[in-house]
Image (cartoon, rainbow, N blue to C red):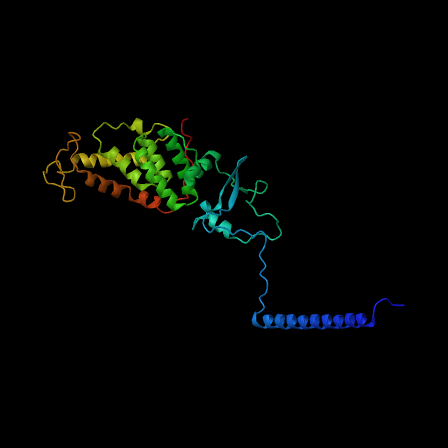
Length: 302
């Protein structure tokens, strides 16, 4: 038997129906609003950003190294220094890589590029000049600088690094004048430097000092007899040139009479040079043909 009147049940039932209708109306309104918002806002696909983006390589300062073996020593330097047009290295690097090899030649210590027949000290000197910023910043004496530059000139000439060769010759020019005359002639011939050779010939031919044949034959840089004969012949021409004339040279303005450098010099310097260029013309022309074709010099004294 129920203790509540019937009206209580009716009230509860009506209130339940009202609440249900209210909730339903609210849900419909929310759904319509959501649809309206979707219609107004376009769909944008999500942007995927990698957690760690891969860095890019700098165009100028991302240098590929190359490993050489000279004798029993490994050298590892930037490859760009050897990528010089017209050299054997340009041709070497332009060859297609062997696809059957996993590791390219010169890429590491286990597979270096072998430079057979190259002196280790000369190669180190060559690298010292080729990569000056990587060399140790220490003060060295002029003799050590001279030997380093000569070693570098040897390989720059042999490998036909034309630009580097010119720079080395420019740096050596002030030093070469202090060397023994016969050594200058030998070095000039070996490395095909006509200016050095012509200047030394002029010095020997135009000098008022006595020139002994014995001194020209002294080892290790003794001259051949043909060169000795030409030098003595030019000295004789210079001594007799203009001896009976007081005219001046039309090019340098020097007189053709006795020179201030000695009582027996009768020729201006430019005429002496012309005589040297005439008598040694074939030698000078041959020196300019093939820079890589030169003889191995005797070892210089330590």
